[in-house]
Image 1 (tube, rainbow, N blue to C red):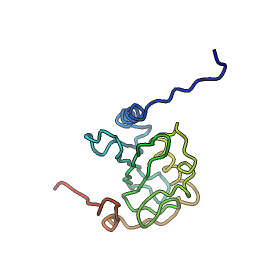
Image 2 (cartoon, rainbow, N blue to C red):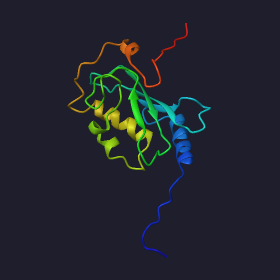
Image 3 (cartoon, rainbow, N blue to C red):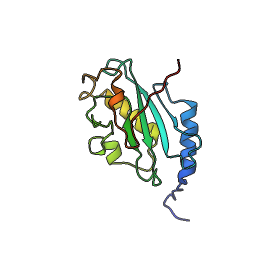
Image 4 (tube, one colour):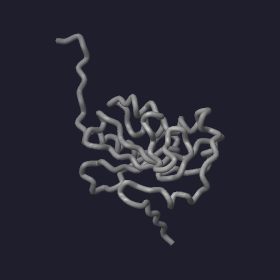
Length: 159
């Protein structure tokens, strides 16, 4: 028997099913959540995340919607992350809402063990960092101009 611990690599779809189950149960204090965009997406690639802005920051009282895309190489490689809600943050491209790996160490130093939950919690912590916590934020309702690689972002509301 080997003295080194053998690591079991969980297949991608099993890992994503675990993450989905955890996301559906709710996370911590409820200020971060995530789930699948489309229940029919058998590849489990497209996800939606939500972060409620942390107390005593410029983000307080706001709800931030994100899109996460887990490619076929997830969790070996990180998902792409894009804020749908306009936000002013050092690690986010102001034109398209993409979280830039070069400015967000968790993405540039991604480890297989990291999860979407970890990623959303780290983004929330980043909102509380000294460099971001007091940044002025775009006016609410400015999401309409955001461009999406798949086409314009459309918002829907029930009246």
